[in-house]
Amino acid sequence: MKKSINEYVLDSICAHPEKTFLIEWSTGEKVTYASFGERLNQVAGVLRNEGVREGDVVTLISDNSIDMAIMMYGVIVYGAIAKALNPKLTSLEMGNIVSHSGSRIVFGSKKFDIAGFEGRMLDIGAYRTQSAEGTLRKQFDPETGAELIYTSGTTGTPKGVLLSHRNIVHNVTIAINRLKLDHTHTTLCILPLFHNFAFISDLSTMIFCGGSVVIHEGFDISRLASVEAALMEHEVNSFSAVPLMFELFLRFNCRINPPSMKFCVSGAAPLKEKVAIEFLKKYAFPIIPAYGLTESTCFCTISPLEAIDNTAVGVPVDEIRIISDDNEELGPYDIGELIVKGESVMRGSHFRSEDRCFIDPEGTWLKTGDLGYYDQKRYLHITGRKKNMVIRGGEKIYLEDVDLCLTHLAGVAESSTVSFEELEVEKIACFVVLDQGSDLSSFEVLSFLRERMGQLKVPDIIIIQSYLPRTATGKIKVGELRRVAESHLLQPV
Image 1 (cartoon, rainbow, N blue to C red):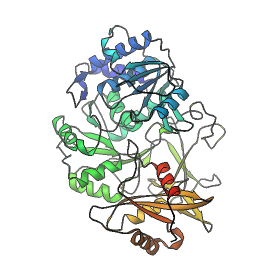
Image 2 (cartoon, one colour; image 1 turned 180 degrees about the vertical axis):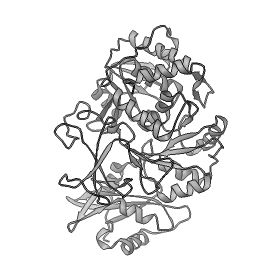
Image 3 (cartoon, helix red, strand yellow; image 1 turned 90 degrees about the vertical axis):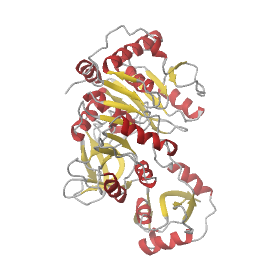
């Protein structure tokens, strides 16, 4: 295996110089691999002129674009650390993260108001005016930092994950092998590049194997028609998405099945079995379930293409064990916490933190905080989050079980169940979004849960809302729901 990201980048540039690598859907701009190499040199020129040294953190703030993709890889192959941020973060959130990272330079798609930032801010496309002279360095220590991702704490203490060349090389090459990708493959990037799922699954896999990437400006309901058109025009073979996107494709009867499509990859949140089955029946190509976390780069598991189990998230990329509360390894079907070890896993604690994320003193077995079990085939099943659990009467109540139960209640579009505190007592709130035309009441939802799950597991409160607040990648904002529940006047059940 090659040691650095640079080696894969340079090999693809040499092997496929005239092949189109990047296509920007909104503008029609195309970049060949040869031109990509030149633009990487241009990025290096900008960074040198700005005094960026190897190991410095460079902040990138932009929606999806060719410039964003080139800047991310340009920073990495230069030897600096790329830190991409969501442009929709508030000024305080950006300022908190930029300060914590120590970044003194920001490249953005516009001039952003970053609280407390006194460094340099340049346009994300500033490299375009630079000379393309120079030669990219090929060798790097595999432990060299490449990418810094902040996973939470944007308004409190930031939680950063520093990934190395080794982490990214291992995770990307495993994905290429598991998904059987090669230079003939084309992906559509509809997830934001500031999220590592898109960066690894759609962009990096294509760079490493010499494929092509169609960069879409992003996903929302107003852009469904352009997603359909991009898939058809560029003969796309796959794309990555979060479960909510698949549900929307089905709900709006989208035409996303051109003859070229082979599969989709699902991650970032649990995929409902019924959605996967309905999707395959409607579109005649499968969703590949996967599971991962930022601390392990992206993929922890990927389902085998030839043997997908829609109830599971696939088989491990690295070594995964299931352990009890006493740290004993569990057998098949026993639910416990997942711990993961391998080349994809970050080294040490979180960035500029002394937290203990590992279960062993050597710092090799990462605690994921996720609960699950293996079946007899060694497929992994995720049952919920360890912290998303309430204990009542000595019994553990996994809150995802409430949401799973509600998938069988007609009239419920989706739900999210969270724990919260009232007068130092831990309680459960279930937020419910109804199907259009449904007139279910909170009492009817509560009665259904009581009948199916028993009184012990019934939420203390049902809150019916028009939508569930989500992040840019479709994850539910649990903290926001907790705040709503805490401020809600509880009614006796």
